[in-house]
Structure formats: structure tokens, C-alpha cells
Image: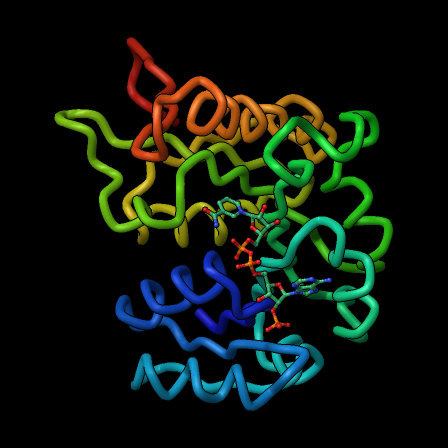
Length: 212
Ligand SMILES: NC(=O)c1ccc[n+]([C@@H]2O[C@H](COP(=O)([O-])OP(=O)(O)OC[C@H]3O[C@@H](n4cnc5c(N)ncnc54)[C@H](OP(=O)(O)O)[C@@H]3O)[C@@H](O)[C@H]2O)c1
């Protein structure tokens, strides 16, 4: 797939590297295009770098991997997002990991959908530390990844990208259900940092029946 990644921080660069290794075409977008180009060069094949706008023009799927505080501005800088699939990967954690920055109604993803007019937004709640993205198997269990969105085709594409990383992807329903799944990230952060469990933890949905 053609994937544009907005933000060259820890999450964006880790995801881009893993997907490039899986054969996807990646364009990293940065407010400083030289930074994005250097990152792409360090990855090698299947990756290049540019501005947020160039990233959006290239990608069929755009990953929003910026802090919540910069999300609205990043979307504005990114330009015309209509017809694109936007993966909202933001977590609305407050500084010092002390809870959420925004209330759950409306969710961050619903706000992103309002700002990114004409785009199909899929929320992905990364309840895993970026350092554990390459080790999603916990014994016999595969870490779950909760996603939601209103467009089934968009969700199916995002699901494939999650499966490529090694997640057990759970479709949690419509975009409105981001109100239900976004708080899972707050719980994960609290367990990892405030309750002393560390970042090598993940959530798992247990099912008796085969997954859909
Ligand atoms: N790290 C994790 O383990 C993890 C896990 C789950 C979810 N998340 C979420 O994923 C998002 C990105 O996390 P991250 O760890 O990659 O963050 P990060 O390392 O701080 O990088 C965020 C990137 O966003 C871009 N950006 C755009 N506007 C910004 C602003 N106003 N201030 C600072 N940076 C801005 C920057 O890229 P350019 O300078 O290239 O534009 C920056 O490198 C966050 O919402 C975070 O909560 C992170």
C-alpha cells in the first residue's frame, strides 16, 4: 500500500520502518522535510521523505502520528485530505502521563474527522509501547489492536496493516466508538507508568468463537 506518515517521531518512524520492510511504499512527512528525508535514507528501500502536504498527496492511507496538542495544526498544514484514509494514532494523554487531555465525548477521532474534511477516519488505539511493536506475541497470545471507523473498506485496509505488524486486530465498530476505545490507551499508560507494570504489556480480547 502507499502509506504517508505525518510526524517523524517515535511512533511514526517505527511504523514506517516496519511497513517498509513488509514491502509497503512509505513517505514520511515532517515540518522539516530534511529530517524526513534523513529518516527515509536510514530505512533504505521503499521509503522517502517530504513535507506533510507531499506525504498526503502520495499516500492512500495517511497515519497521523503527532502529539494530540499538534493534531489540529498538523491536519491544517497537510492540506486537502478529501478521499484519503486517515489513521488517527494519537493518544490524548496529558503531560507527565497523568490522565486524558480531553474528555471522551466527543472523542479525539471524531474531532480529527471534523478537521480532516472529506477523509475517512479510522481510529487505531496503540495500547502498546513503541519499543514492543516488534514483539507482539506474548507466549501463545497475540496482542490485540482496537480500531474503529465508519467506512468498512477503509477499516479493512487499516486492519491489513495492523495484521502486517503482527496484531490481532479488533474492529470495535463505528467511529463514535472511539469514545469507548480511546480510554484504553489511558488505562494502558496508567498501568505501565503509574502502577509500575512497565511498558511490556498489552491488552488481549479473548474469544471462544473464531474471529470474524
Ligand atoms: N510512542 C509510543 O509508544 C506511542 C504509543 C501509542 C500512541 N502514541 C501516540 O502517537 C503520537 C505520536 O507519538 P510519538 O511517540 O511518535 O511522539 P514524538 O516522538 O514526540 O513525535 C511526534 C512527532 O509529531 C510531529 N509534530 C507535529 N506537531 C507537533 C507539535 N506541535 N509538537 C511536537 N511534535 C509535533 C513531529 O514530527 P515532525 O517534526 O517531523 O513534523 C514529532 O516528531 C502521539 O499522539 C502519542 O500519544 C505513541
